[in-house]
Image 1 (tube, rainbow, N blue to C red):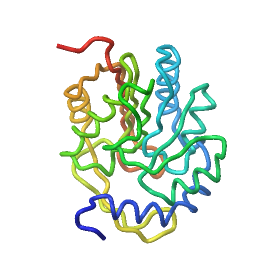
Image 2 (cartoon, rainbow, N blue to C red):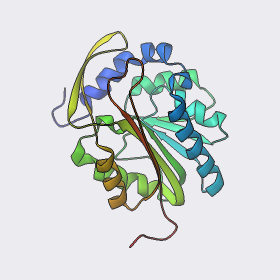
Image 3 (cartoon, one colour):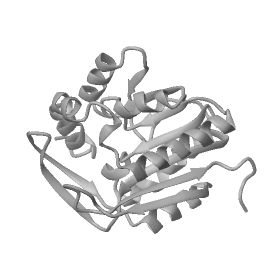
Image 4 (cartoon, rainbow, N blue to C red):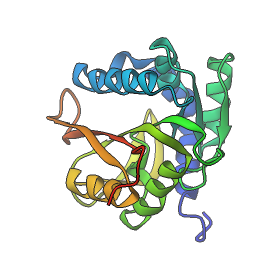
Length: 219
């Protein structure tokens, strides 16, 4: 792996599991009811603000991009894994997908009505969150919304097996207060937050944060 590319191992892992991932998780049916509730709230806010389309950042194989469209959202996806994007394009030919990274989104300033980051920040180091959230803020129009989900906790966990494949990558846990503090520093206004207990095979609490880019700058 390229030592100068912190996402190299993540790209390699997701390229390897892309086909298996799409078979095991073909749609949004896996999501917990509480998670779906937060997604539906995000969709309602985005439609209400009418500021533009939604970017599913870290979209993987596009299953949640498709779910957003089922909620009446104009959505497209980006992901750092070319393998995941290949599967997304094949599985959802009517939607747009592009290879790109969270910290360098392929959108103009204030172009979007929503940024949907569904477990996308889990491969971002804590010191990278400020830059990632600043990028979310940049591409959102004033009055737009971001939804960020993650595994709640502290530290990292090493993943050596995923979706039937041997892989090697790190996943980051974040305390909800850490995420909300970084979002506030980027300029976002809090709207709603949910933390739920693990279910089924999950071993870690899960958290979702909904924020708005204010019409006026916060002081």
